[in-house]
Image (cartoon, rainbow, N blue to C red; front, side, top):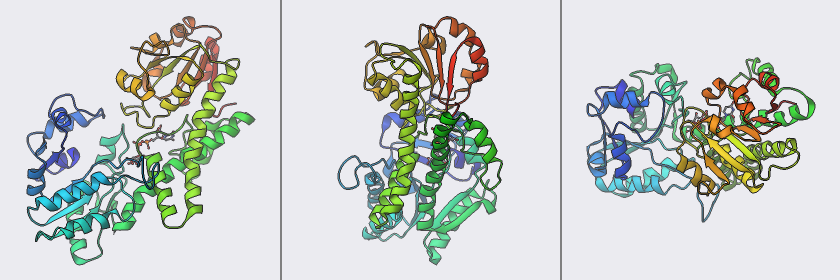
Length: 437
Ligand code: UGA
C-alpha cells in the first residue's frame, strides 16, 4: 500500500487495522516491520495520501477499492488441521464490508487464499442485499521479504484475476490501471479468478520445490564428494532451468512456503487427488529432513555428542535482511540441539531477543540459551559455530580472532554456504558446508 501511495499520488490509501498498537507503530518513526527502503517511502507519503488508522468502518465506507490483507494461517484444529488455511479473518472482513455498506465497491483479495475463496467472499457480499454491488478481484502478492521494495517497484509480473463478465472485466481494468502507473502493461497479467488464486500457491510451491530438490542433491554431494554449489552453477547455466532458487541451505523458512504447500496438498485431497497431494507433501518432508541432517552432521563431526557443548548460533531470521523468524530453519535446528542438551549462544543482528526465546520456549540464562550482542560474544568459548542465516556481516568477521577464543578443535558448520571454508580451514577450523563432502 505504501508503494501504491508513492507511485499514485492521486490515490488516497488508508490502511485500517483493529490493533491500535500496530497502527501507532505505523504512525511512529519506528515501523513495526524491518524492511529495507520501507521507512523512507512511508515517511514520504504518510499524512499526504497514506494514512494508518483504527477507524475500520470509516475506511470501508469511504473506499472505492478495498484490499483484504489479513493473515490466513494454517488451521490448528478441526477439519484440515495442520494443512488447510484458516479463513476466519478473510470471512470476517467480507462480512464487515457488507455490513458497513457505503456504495458499490471492488473488493481485492491480497491475502494468499485457497482456490475458490473469492467465490465465498462474493457470496457473503451478495447475501447482504444492502443495495450495493461488489466485484471480487484476486491480486496475489509476489514480493519476497528483504527485497520487498525492489520487488514492488519492478515486479516480474502483477496478477489480476476477476469474473469473466463485463462487470468483472471492468473491475480488473480498474485494478490494472492502478499498477499501470508504474508497471509496464505487458507485465500485468489478467486471468480468471481461480487461475489467479491457484497461480499464487503454485508459484510458491515451485520455488520451494527447487530449494528442496537442490537440498536433496546436497545429501548426495556430501556422500560422494561432489560440491552442491558447483552442481547448482552447472545446472543453472541451462537456460531452461535458470540459476535462481538453487542455493542449497539448511532449509527454507518463512511464513509462506510451507503454509502454501500444505494448503495446496489439502486442496488436492479435498478434490480427490491424493497422489498429487503426496507429490507436493514430499517438498515439505525434504525440508524437514534437511534441518535434521544438518544437526546429525554436527553431532557426527563432534565425536558423536554435543551434550554440554557450547554452540554459537549465528543468525536466527529465516533469511537475511528481515527480522522475521516465522518457520525459520534456525528454530528447528536450535530445538534439536537443545534436545541433545547443547548450550546455545545465539546472535542475530535484527531479531529481538524475546522473539528468539519465545520461539524456543525457553527463558534466558537458564544456561541452555544465551542471547548475545554480537558474533564475537556468541563464539567466545564455543566448541562450534553454526551459521543459520546468510547475513552479510558474517563475511566480515575476524575469524582468526574468533578461532583463538574457541574450544579446540573448533568446528564451523555453514548452513548457508556463504563463508570461505578454505580460508577458514587455513585458520584451523574444521569446516562443514551444506552439500560439500
Ligand atoms: C516467498 C516468495 O519468494 C515470494 O515470491 C512470495 O511472495 C512470498 O514467499 C509470499 O508468499 O509472501 P519469502 O518467503 O519472503 O518469499 O522469501 P524467499 O526469498 O522466497 O525465501 C524463502 C526461504 O527459502 C528462505 O528461508 C530462504 O533462505 C530459502 N531459500 C531461498 C533457499 O534456501 N535457497 C534459495 O535458493 C532461495
